[in-house]
Length: 42
Image (cartoon, rainbow, N blue to C red):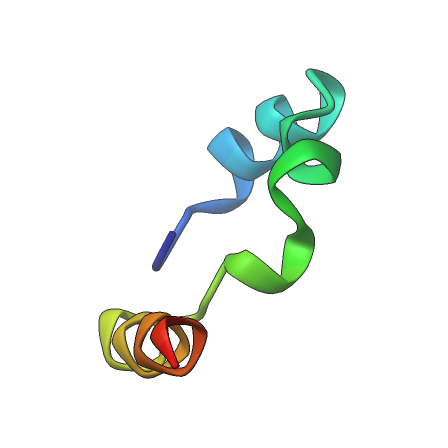
């Protein structure tokens, strides 16, 4: 996920969504997210 604002991120934390998905899968912007996705594809 990219560019998630603080309030929705906090709600996802409280729901344990961040733990399930992994905090490393939340990126600062779409460019970083696309680079991360490409690296996972290999």
